[in-house]
Length: 210
Image (tube, rainbow, N blue to C red):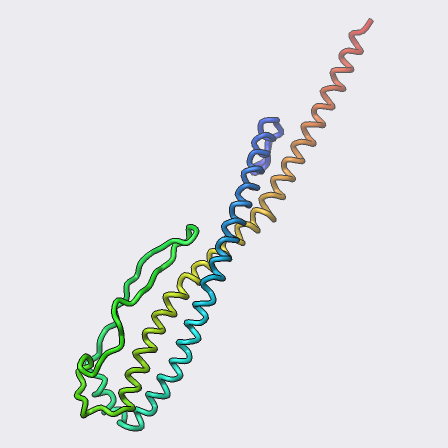
């Protein structure tokens, strides 16, 4: 009687194990193909995402420098008053797929750049430093949304590549060697059983001879 997880010493079990090994080998090939396609797509998306992040960092430095100038010109209290009323930023979130990997598609639904009229700020009450700070931060907000939209698919695909690599490693390093060892063990046992049957048959035949 075979133990749990061990193949029965039968021709049928041997045949089934060989079929399973063939399916596992085919699965490894498919996973490798998927991983290669994901890696190619990852490289295609990684450079634009890195460039978007770099632009965001540059714009962030520019925006905070403009903010310091505006604070020096107007003071914190006056600058807070000029920034009122606050507004929300609306983005659309969709779903997509890249080689079976679910990704989030992010896009802003409106331009974040506003005129003085749109800001509701009287032209006489605001100086060039505050205007520059407002413009710089509006530009920063747009770049941050763009950067997030580019980075989200990159992270999902990178996770999928890592997950697929782990699956391939488990199949190659654990499942395949285990199957091969079990197949070899059952084959040796069957061959030994067959040799014993031949020897037994020869003994029986030799005893029957006159």
